Length: 222
Ligand code: DX5
Ligand code: ZN
Image (cartoon, rainbow, N blue to C red; front, top):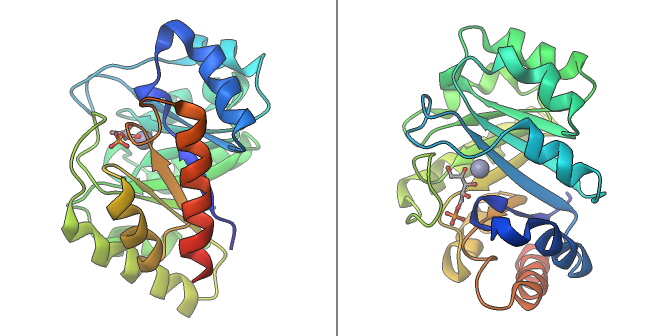
């Protein structure tokens, strides 16, 4: 299983976004988590296609786009065209989740489905053979810097058991409240794609990223 740190640029300094992405690349980061918020599915608004298009020109990182958007079907082609490598939609945001996933696959990028803390694994378990990743939200989507919700750990475990039982090749991504302490919890529960915003983008970005990558490696090898 491939473990990756996926820094969330929601916590970046947007005045220096390009420079910070370069710093992450230098530190060994391979995935970049890109949070798109529409002010409807979640209370806040972040950024959209123009920003992604602009950073795509300068970066070869894997662009992991997390759509916190109502009816994301409307925008899948646009996000693929502006440089997404994977697109993750929320189960709660789609009228027809299968259709949304098919649109993502038709656009030629990896497909992800995400569930909010209150949404059971059962709601998406029938989709395991259709998606590349399941994103288990470990906070209420919408803002960076929130506290990890402990009740989500069991969902990660349940999902990993199910994926193993069904012999599927699906990544488990976690997002929200990851720090020194919760990093170990989520990896031990079965997560392998670790989103982190405020944990990475503070003080010395390069040394944080390097250190977290090392810790992920160490915990996952234990
Ligand atoms: C929240 C976003 C996250 C956010 C995580 O809705 O999906 O990706 O940036 O921030 P931290 O890691 O600070 O909780
Ligand atoms: Zn996210």
